[in-house]
Length: 244
Image (tube, rainbow, N blue to C red; front, side, top):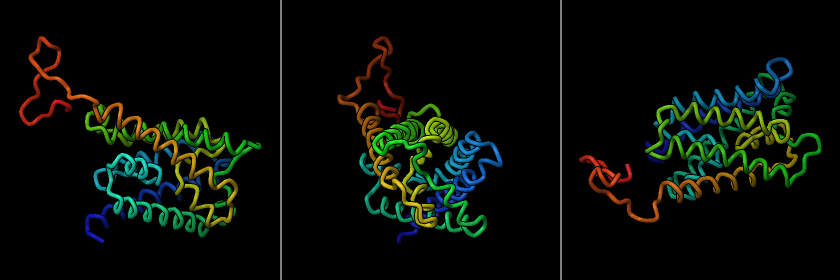
């Protein structure tokens, strides 16, 4: 593995590990803490911190659905995407294993995303897709789009999106939005109820958001006209493209 790919993989591993470890414990201890709000904030804060910490190294995906979104828009090479996926899934499993060591298998089982209250499988797929759409849309708008107004605080925007998604969908599906976040505790805790929901929904939602943002905002259908000030479209400054 090339050195740069290794550095990126380690960043993805650490970020995903933090998400899964903190996320599982937050859910397992929700009754002793802040309930749904505490769970939502725990997930959102750990992502905000980790995106801010290593976003400049790997892009801070921490989620196979985000990596897939970059892949379908050709913003990451397939080989590097495979490295990211391996790092994310390995980190998710190790994070769940460590929770089992420090808090017991019951905590892992409690922190495993699942459907609540007889919520339907089809509805759950749609909900996970919609929640992940919001997440990946914000990722593209803040971290991918070079014109993003809030690129310097992308971690905060992404973390807050995860927080609001969990507040909305947590009581129904757990609002995983992330196949790795589901797979780690599923594998370690042996809870496989509706596991496909957390692959199909996030992958479909991520691809839809990525392709929509890519073709609407990052790939203009026609060349952008430039001209003097009176036309309303200024000439680019030296070293700047018209799309900047």
